[in-house]
Amino acid sequence: MSEDTNLNEVPVEDADLKVSAIPSEELAALTDDIVAAMKSVYDPEIPVDIYELGLIYKVDVSDDRDIEILMTLTAPGCPVAGTMPEMVADAVRSVDGVGDVNVTLTFDPPWDQSLMSDEARLALNMY
Image (cartoon, rainbow, N blue to C red):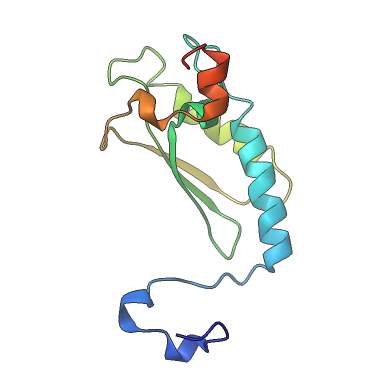
């Protein structure tokens, strides 16, 4: 496949890759702002934000700027299981240009320490 492949020539197995109607520069800026908003939410038992802990599995931005977030917690019995998704949704709703925000909680796959960023490991002295 050449570097300047026409979208009509994309193989069937790549057909699920979707091009956003949002201009790429605007989408990048919106994504950066969403990540910054998620980084303002901290796990109450671990002094690291949820993004660096690896609790965010997926963020989808629709062409209407609606946001779908798939996240987990450090443990299924986490005491903030009822409130953490709403805390994340509220933080992301504060981003200019964002439409509706939906946060779904999953425990598949379960979270483990390998999902933490280097920044989180450094903050927790886990090197």
